[in-house]
Image (tube, rainbow, N blue to C red):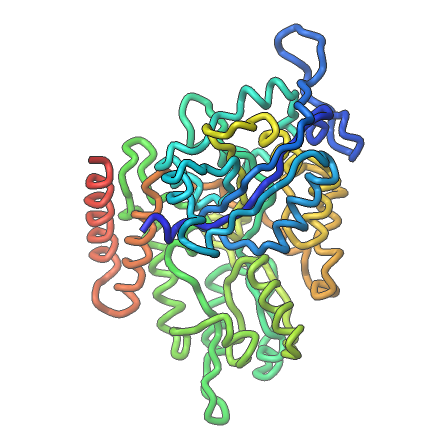
Length: 444
């Protein structure tokens, strides 16, 4: 089961020069380093310049070799030419999964993953505490989005910092303008509530000319609740906790959307290939890549994007935050170089601007970096990309190393309600019991 959870990606390690990525010495526009709190006057620590190869693996998040080279390997090679990043892609065979790499005594130096999967790496006793390196290399964490930075702290204990964020993604509302025009329905806006949206959905989902047109594709209960930062656990006990009012409201919302005729068993392809699906909820990065690929094949779609609807009880919050994090292995023989590399990716204005320009939400707090968002992607020209930043994202939910066990049961609870095999209260109660049973077995 574990090997199925693993994915891959690689980060580069830094040497030689001062860790300019997050210090004021970088020459690429990064903010000055935080002043030392020890009273010492020496500058940031330097990294050895001997050539090193850092092996980078990913965990439960898809990444192509070309993307890895463009966004991670090349920027590190440019900054630190003595560091080579070797991408160990888990999709290229079982031997490349983290579990098997560690069992073979070939633990990668760096692993990256997104927030929902971050705590799962604690099962492997993989990540080292980065606080010492933040201090010795004078990395200024104040220039980084505190919301996403906290995700790397929250899975640790006693103030440990186990991961650094590189960029974020968020769930958005993609829609086909032609579908709305066909039925004379106004386009989604960035300030709608879910009640407003459901009114639109009921008008959009219909039979016309013998064709079933659908209104909106959801993903699952977990992704619905994540837009409000709902945790699968009770932070005090670490046990699964599904029977909360917020989870019940999330499931009721999903049930209402899926009960609209024609609004079930939908796929992304119904949106950009068949074009019988008017709109959907999807990760910005994933959907833009799919739409770009469709256009490359000659499939044209008149689309745009809006913020996800808001809850009346939680106004101003729209779309789940899904940051990407990098961790350094406790077993790495090149810890300093690995840290230098990932902190450069996080703190370099040049690197963060490049990510932003290619449609990845930067973690660096810099207006110019944010303003570059999407400017290098022709497919985003004329689109409503300001929606990506318009509303606040909920704080990241508490998670722990049993996240995978709990999320599978939560998704199953939603499916049981949609299929009519259980009501909301029963489905959540039974799923919580199954999750906690699995957690107890895992603890043994």
